[in-house]
Image (cartoon, rainbow, N blue to C red):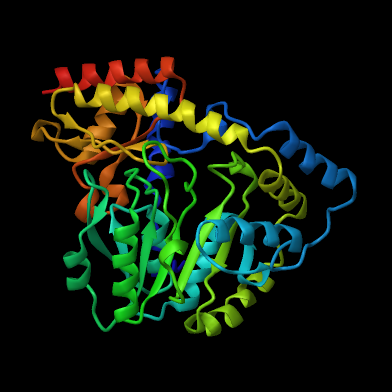
Length: 393
């Protein structure tokens, strides 16, 4: 039977690689899963007041369809959060989604026609390219200096064509931990404005910052056509509850999109109402747990980056945000990055993700690992990786 060419081009290396890990486990080897960036799977849980808000919503009968745009009180609090980062919007500019992934799908499907091009930071989070391809577009990677956390401005300019419709930003970045500074964000907004492009900015890791203060795109957005994607999976430790949002800047250029994109929200009905009440509590309740979470993750980052840079044949930039390391495989004896990841899994039982799964052009020759497990687990995994790179032929 026929399968759509569009869906055949969809890839998600982070979860696709799990199939290989299952085979290794079936052969009796224990696997250290360092592939998925889910804090909850590594022991971090949303605070009790947030869990209680979810339970209370259910017990209070808040189990019906919410409005398709989302719970009004939640949208108001989200607008306050985004305004604190620089935007100037109200609840009417917020649309609550089933995670950032649904929001991304809605945005891409609303702006892409067959053959349109979307600029993505190389390397990028895989669903960006997959959704662009799914809706008939062409993903185009632009270069990012991983050591200095800066986009290569001239490279971006050289890749803009009459078919380009948007620039996507992910800051802090998955998979690299790059965090764009205010100057870089301003340059990117200027380029977008000069070329009449949408700016889609994913800030899902906005409070998981280690060394410098985070600057959101809202601070430099002005009245530009900026669309912010964010959610509650990472900072608020609500990954399994699937709640995110789209925030539209108050730009006249977004008027048509603001009118038409919500049709997609109505078609899919609504986001879970009890979960929205939990998300509301996560914004209104105590925030101390976020600081504690980030402090623990920073300690893990420091261990992993130090260990990786001490290993022969590897080098690792220091991630400034999120919870991923993206080491470069300097030694060619390991073969391709996918061969490196596969052999590491089969020989040592450590599951990472091949860098080419985050874009062939700039991801190849790297691998990504998550530094969310305990220090003990990470130290053990680093020992296994070090043994692998020291003994591989």
